[in-house]
Length: 372
Ligand SMILES: *Cc1c(COP(=O)(O)O)cnc(C)c1O
Image (cartoon, rainbow, N blue to C red; front, side, top):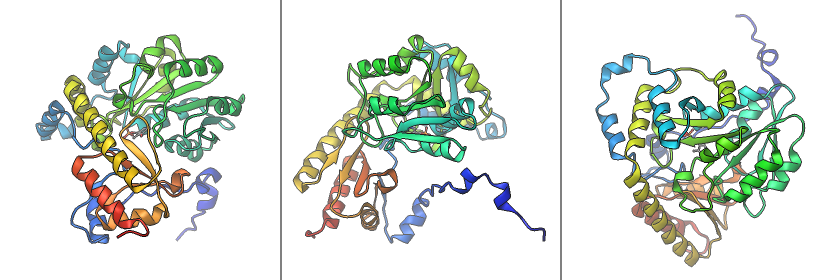
């Protein structure tokens, strides 16, 4: 057998990267923890599921279509998004989840020696993609749990190519208003690409909350991310997109892999967009109601919380979050432990159905020290 010199073949930045290990499938976990039911409250999934028209499209997808390649550039979906948001469809690129469009942007703009700038406690994929691609990720500490514009600006140097802002921020729920975002963009002055990740924007109902898509015309260096995974509950089909100025998107398009968005995902997203008004309203009402319920119960338990906009909440526990994860799993509740996200002793819980929230509170009561 020939000797394989994997060390020589593998770049140092790949060797040094700690791979992210996704959780096992639910049936495996249920066997492992000996539980008959599992409430998934770890991924910010919408408990209402996809909007009605999307459900129909999914149920009626003709099996022979599985043998045919989809539109390579999500043609009809880009047309619909363009009409909806007043953009040229060529200002939009669709990917296999917003996760994939993160890789498009980094590949398009970074080369050896370049860096990206973001916060130290935000959606981790920006940092991960930069690192395993060989680029430095410069991380500004959060201030009062939110993105700190001044700290971000201080980290920028001549080799900074992209600044990632998560608005509202996952996991803290904090957000920049229109004025603050405008000031930040003015300070950046077109010297970097500014990515505004709006994965949770559909959950926000506040007049001061900026709509990145409406700002593209005035800011050619702005790139906006959105996803069908959260509000539209199509996480399992993987569809997200980015939008930007024509020139910027024409550049990013070079690094896209065509056919990465499957036919069912494209059609379901199109249908989800077509009748979303009631779905949005029902989801927002559910999130508001269940957040209020959680806040009351967590207040009674004396647990500190951090929350803002979005369908999730952080809770600080008087025990290790990894221990809490295991003990909650034993009670049929899956949450996100936050040590890996630089928030030791915190957990993040997705806002779910009332049944799931009651089950979560009951389980939490059961694992807190000094109670039974
Ligand atoms: C969930 C999430 C995404 C990615 O969603 P996809 O499922 O890949 O479309 C991107 N950004 C943030 C902040 C998220 O929470």
